Image (cartoon, rainbow, N blue to C red; front, side, top):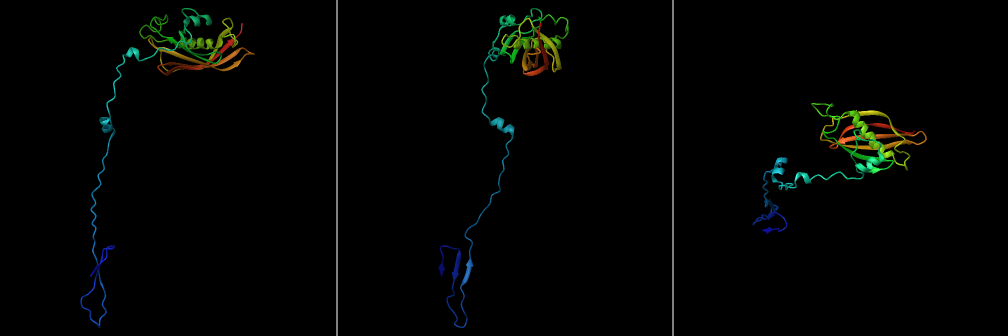
Length: 217
């Protein structure tokens, strides 16, 4: 009897052979490997499990009065007074925070309960009039244009028209109105400047429109 080391086949030969009958080897296959399969286990994780296992975040202990930086001061109120001809109670720009002469300007108006229009608009609900928002934005447009190198000056610049004005949300006492005015078209020959304006409170648009400025005597 011979056993092969390279296969699982056993060859058996009979001990006695009959001369009249041919002998054939007996081939028997024995399985030598058994495989056992375990049922697969599937684990499902939910977002709540991830949140529960996440490391705790460190709480910001900075006092709230120190968390928010002040607006930059590119142009303060004294510099604004040197450019704009408006005075109390109709100067509606408190600070310029970005300025590109002849291109664009971003300025703020701090809306306070002490503004002279609140006693009448309205006594029970202090809302800034929309026409004054438009006026404040036009004054920011004046800061863009009222420069000698641009072609404007305090003596020859006027608010000429508005188009496509929309008021998105009310502005109330305590808000900070952030206004951006951008020059889109300038015709020096005719003394006409066209601007796009948007006003924001807390990053949300509260007013927008197209403004027309006129330069002339």
